[in-house]
Length: 313
Image 1 (cartoon, rainbow, N blue to C red):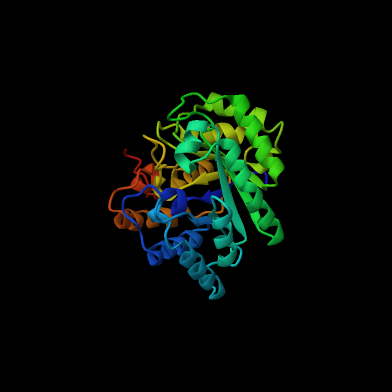
Image 2: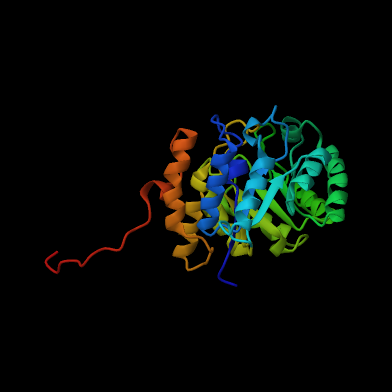
């Protein structure tokens, strides 16, 4: 549909990985159930990473198993697509064992951030992708690619536009089906986003590109709109604005799913999501992580229809 966008819900992975409160598997599965009940069809439920480094992602295999069980029971819609993040071959083997049909790999556009985040250079990270892609092909698993620090790095500052485009092209040639362009520290502005995606879509089909914006400086919605006007129709969001990167100083949450849905629905653009159900889920998640969520729409709720207005007023 021309007047529609796809929302990829990141709350259970990118959203929770920086939270001090570690949620148990049962709670995360319940959040997944309620998100799918609100219409979420693409959901990243966790990551097969070392719990030593990211304890918030422990129990991902259990979450995948329980989610699949709910699909069999008819509690979660059959068409729901679950994905997990994998950093290397070991993570990929864990993903295969779990039965997921989609994984995500990630690389940085900054050498400093790559070393801090995954303890290797950019070239080394691409070397790690090779066995992952081979296993994915063998087991018929889709692979999504993330490029982080595309608009700025917490350690190096400005990131070269040419470098981002080159790495996106390199990742696409690996065989990923979609590339998410990330503003990891929420430093981008709408003009920058427009220019970046105009150049990116010359080397990667625009239908294969997604936008991943953090709202650190309050620019995420403007940046999403700028990307949309260039032709991008896929956006990563996180319920309530959960998130932040443990290896990016000062990085706050992802753009809130509720805020993005509110904006697009107001423009007459379909998301397939039920805004009221998303807003209703917000307090439960806030209670579990023990602090309020930054989502604007999540705080004020959905505008209720007004009653009859008196002519005397």
